[in-house]
Image (cartoon, rainbow, N blue to C red):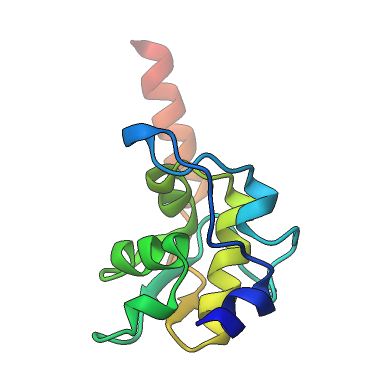
Amino acid sequence: MRERRQRRGHDASFPRHGSAGPLVRPYTVTGGRTRPAEAGLDMISIVVATRERVDWSALEPEHAAILRLCERPVSVAELSAQLDLPMTVVKVLLGDLIADGDVLARAPMPASDPPHMSVLQAVLDGIRRL
């Protein structure tokens, strides 16, 4: 556990402020890293936990929170909002979990066929008539 924290540059002694939880700057959460190890994550990438049982004691609190939220597929943007962390921080933390094999990520499914221009024009004409 200590080796994992040192590898990522985390300090387990986060200052706490009552029930508000840990008060740390985002760069502290990521150990000063600003780019994820896993390239290709964007705000609409879908992530999901790959394992049902995880050694929770070996995880940083932020990693554990992400894994709990990833029990069902969720977007990076949704994780960022639920964790109240900047998206770049969430991407770095997700990169750690992907590298460890705890999380899978994929791009969202593309739309099958874009609408035809005539359909869009009809919608626009209908809106103008309102």
